[in-house]
Length: 246
Image (cartoon, rainbow, N blue to C red; front, side):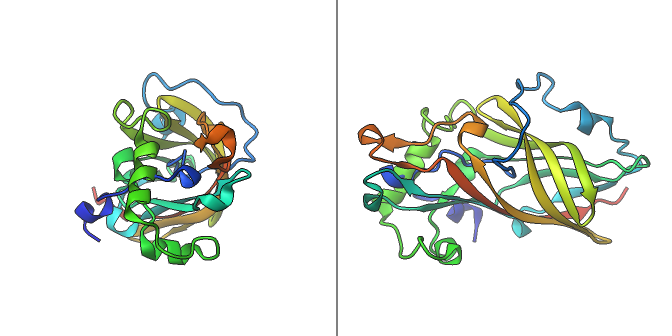
């Protein structure tokens, strides 16, 4: 799919708006750490402390990467709404993998405007609960609500970022603590990852759930909550990065 096709004509219906396109990237609602204030320097200390000269450096390959966010309808009138699939293929960033001290770092982000809504192929892949195509006017409404001032406020906060703070475990199975920034609010979130480091590529994949509340967002709702978006979002990601040569 061409970039021009990824964001064309999408919006939101009351029952299916995604209040979290994010980030993402990568998080779990079971995280136990409290939210932290935004990083004034724009880069958590853990990333800056990695010896990048001795780490293997990779650049995210947007053409081979995909982040999807599945949101679910809720409330007494949930039957009137839709479950939705949000997605971006415009992930950008760098990964520094294992320096002399065995540390890694990454900084990955995407433009909120790059999020698509309810691509037919992604709905089919999502399975039960996502049957059928959504009318174009509903897609436009969902995307408008998602990017509007009540949720992502993309006009004033155009980018969503995720930066590694620390990791636990041994490859390929890791638990990552990540600083996720949405609307200038940064929260520390833990999420699982399966990582495969090859000679020329690094691949990270996984799925988890994250709550709107954890990201400082409020689920979209209408009619006093009779029709709303469920608090939890299902995150599915596949990130590939190309090794950079000195």
